[in-house]
Structure formats: C-alpha cells, structure tokens
Length: 296
Image 1: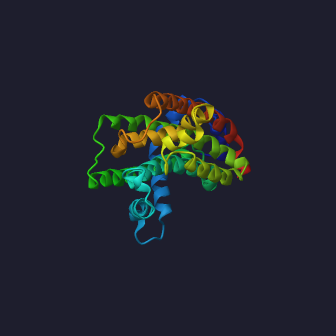
Image 2 (image 1 turned 90 degrees about the vertical axis):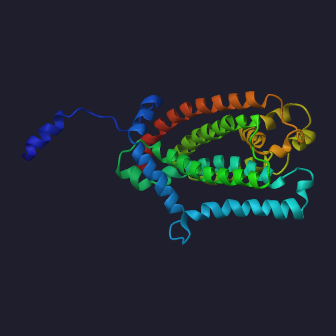
Image 3 (image 1 turned 30 degrees about the vertical axis):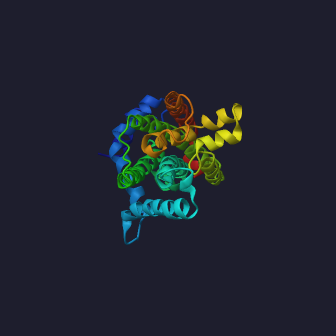
C-alpha cells in the first residue's frame, strides 16, 4: 500500500474521542473491558512496594504483626490501657485496620496519576484505572491485615462469630466507596496542585486521631457532651466505619462500651453518600483529565 493510499484510508476512519468519558456507566464499561490491565497495575504496585527486598511480600505480614504485638505488650500491658478497654490490642488493631484501608486508598490514589505520568503522556488508557489500581492494592493489604486480626481473636478465644458481624459489610462499603471517590477527585486535582498530596497526609493524620481508634466513642461523648459537636464527630464516615469494625470484630466490648444509636442506619446512609460521591467525582475527574498530558 502506498503512502497516499494509507493517508486516504486514515482520512476515512471515524473520529474517536480519547479525552475521557464523563458518563460514569460508559467509563465503567471501558474499565471493565481493560480489567486485565487493571490487574496488571495492581500487581505492579504490590511488587514495586517491596522491590529489591529479600522478603518481598512477606513484609505485608511482618508489619501488621509487629503493630499488633506493640499494642498488646507496650500500650496494653505496660501503659495499662487494657484496664479501661478489654482486649485493648484487638480494639486498636481493629480500628487501625479500618483506618489503614481508607488511608492507603486515598494516599495512593492522590499520587497515582503523577506517579504514572510516563504512561499517561504516551498511551491512551481510561485514566481512572490508575486510582482504581491503588484501591486494588489497598484491598490486598487490607485482606492480609484482616486475616491477622481474625487469627488474633481466635488466639484470645474471642472469635467474631456473633450477629454483630453483619456490621462488617456496610463498614467496608463506607471505606471503599468514600476512599474511591476521594481517590478519583484528589488524583485529578493533584496534577494541577502538587502541594495537595502533602495536605492529604496532614488531613489523614487528623482523621486518625479524630476517630475512636485508641480511645472509645464513649470517652469522646463524655468530653464533647450531647449536641452538634458530638453529631459531627459521630457522623464522620471514618468514625462510623471504625465503630462498625469494632462492633463486628471486637467481641470483648459487648455491653462494656457504648455505641451511638442507629449505627447500622448511619452506616447505610454513609455508604449511599459514598456511592453518589463516586459518580460525582468521576465526572469531575473526566472534566479535569483533558490537560493531564500538558500539566505532567
């Protein structure tokens, strides 16, 4: 085929929009069509995290196990925290497992587009796939921490085999939906405002201490009193998810520490809000991604 024939054939090809899709359903369909690539990016993120280390993925087990032992021995036994909260190590580790999932999704999603600038500039892909790969790798690490948490409850002879285990699913949905929504929004805005990733680290640190992870919700209620401040504190989605995880996995707290009224309803409402935010922030992402290549 001559050059002129190739040019003529190219001119007859229909125009195809590659600047992203603002329709969430079509965007989701496109991502599902490239799910193999999404899996590849998740595996690449996990391998890159422990690149050149001798133990590799084993570190994903060592770190949470070390955390659990520190909370059990140092904070629980030496500092006496377990006197106010039974099975303090399980209590803290449950909250950290929930918080860690959200933190990893948000922080990984925020830097995902900038970190993959080479691919973004050279190859067309549905760019939502990069923050979604961060969600996948965060869920993998979360699964390992969850296995360690359940194993610890079995060792302490307090397995979470109770009706309250039902709180796990809406709590997980709150974290994943909210984290995915924020990951999409922050991944796009971080391309234009690079200071944002550092601000995110600060906000995540505040959220860690603004949730009942190392203290109980009852202590916060006593300090804040009944009113608007307590409502704002309680309805923070991270607080709700942490409380839901504790309700599901920390069986030693049954009848010992208080929980807010209507916790399940609050979790369901927060889950619905998280799903709506995914749709809204995906549209924001689609509008902002047009100039990604130039900004990167």
